[in-house]
Picture 1 (cartoon, rainbow, N blue to C red):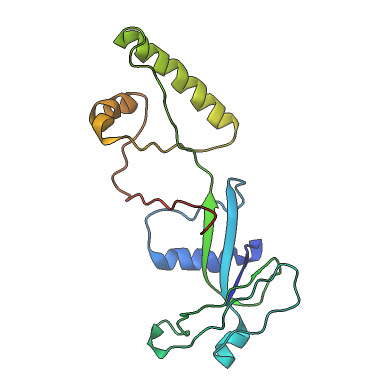
Picture 2 (cartoon, rainbow, N blue to C red):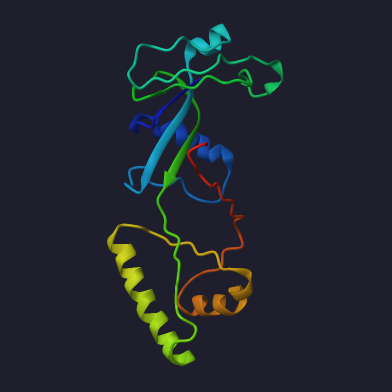
Length: 184
């Protein structure tokens, strides 16, 4: 198996994979510069024939791990990998695409507003001013969306205020978080 950078020539295979998944959203525009990570997982032709991964080339971008372990139980037409080999490379391959991972930048807002300052109306005016300025700056930086997670004690009341400002509560998708660190 090979993990490499996305190439424009991959688009047709990725469109087919996206359609096969049957999700009710369009394939995003992968030329959008907000996609800062674009990785493609391929199955090299030699992997299919030999039932194991081809040896890593002498490539300055290659990273080799343990060999793949074939298993008849995968049910997907290719060996299941328990200790998988992955090589990250920038070269294009004549291979079947198995999947891809794309990471698009978005923003998470944090609002700090002194609850002791002024009247409720004055605090609302302050919030409106901050909201408008942050929205303008976020758009000018090229970001397309902002996602807020409200603490439970204020979610109901403050959520209504966000709705008045054009925010949508999105209960149609289940959020998950992956916290990254040096050990990951």
